[in-house]
Length: 243
Image 1 (cartoon, rainbow, N blue to C red):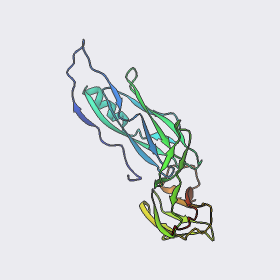
Image 2 (tube, rainbow, N blue to C red; image 1 turned 30 degrees about the vertical axis):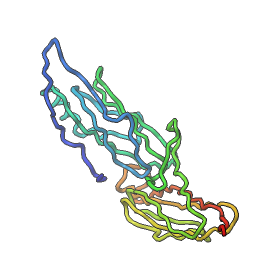
Image 3 (cartoon, rainbow, N blue to C red; image 1 turned 180 degrees about the vertical axis):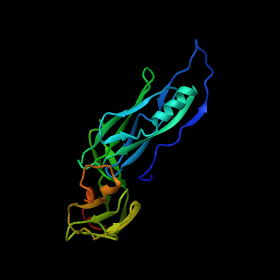
Image 4 (cartoon, helix red, strand yellow; image 1 turned 60 degrees about the vertical axis):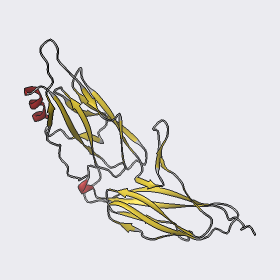
């Protein structure tokens, strides 16, 4: 999604057949909750309504873009019907390291609806996956398990800004790449054989280097914002080959 996205033009789907005695009303949001990531600064909410309405959020880090809301309401008031709309959200970078949530409300008075926006404290990691607790209280990256033998594996992630990868000095992991551009990335790594009789662990640090000139954030202009996610890797203990 482009960083400088604007609110989509409204699209009138169909007009309800109604009269003064039997009018059709509804406001409906497709998803009860949506997940966004720590370095994500835009998202959108799809909804359907028949009502003149306003958009609001319960938290200031998640702000609906309302630049066209007046003209949208004028259209709805002049042409009663069912409207399928897209509300775009202006998000702040999540530098807290914790999951946070905001309720976005489509306020049509008696006919209103809302959805929950969950912004993770982590970047978007697909291998291993980022998991949420059952109560949506925390989010964390799952451990990637590898064999005891010398091997090659990979991590998969998506960032909205350029990124860096690192492992501690002397690590048994060697990264194929240590930096790259925004977008989806697959980075391979090699692991030395584990000759110990116990499993060992390592932490790969994934850091998005965010530029606040392109983000809605309280950071000083020109100051890079670094958001780091830890990817744990566990290598199995040495297994004596059977004869």
